[in-house]
Length: 253
Image (tube, rainbow, N blue to C red; front, side, top):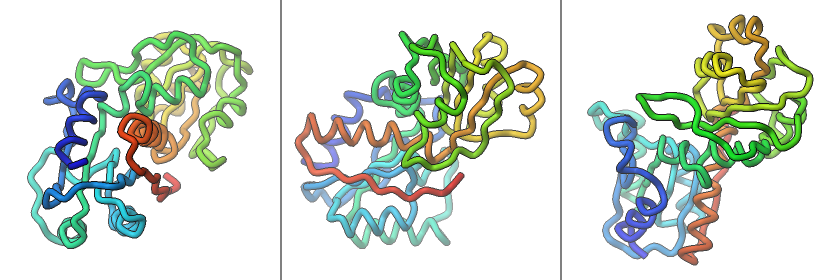
């Protein structure tokens, strides 16, 4: 197993090419290794020294992340970025990043997995981003109180950033977009959704949600984006029979 064969695998199950020109993330291999074969892949939400060190300690030859190092604009290789790249090179650790294609995937993406955990039946695409919908919405299999919804999406029982019970006592419909999508609450209100689940909250949408009678959960940017990473890790183990490990480095945000 090499970085090239893994790149082919990830591109076969995630629509990486379809987000060219939409996603500012440099999706795919961000830092390659020297061609060495890989016996283990580590998975994490964020590319940072802590996840790099723990990946190396775990014996991984590649680290797959949701938030990589490169986001569209050319960067000077200095400071923290230089230290991170130096560490990757010194330890021959390849870095692979997938951002929006991992959010959007209906089965293995952050939003698809969250929709499944919440019990959304026949989820439909929701949430416009550069003329593409990356979230999901639909009717809940069983109506949920906002506290029940929190329990279903909380990773390791960590508390959400914010819970806003502004609508029905039991929600019958739900929309979800992981990460930093607080403003998409306005789309949920416009489409008559009872409950909106995302990662971050925003002062700007508080009164909109209150007056629009929208239940809203800000589950945490990190905590709403562990799900797709872990699902892709599961698929690697099942389909490629390669050793994998999830590296949990929560930010509390």
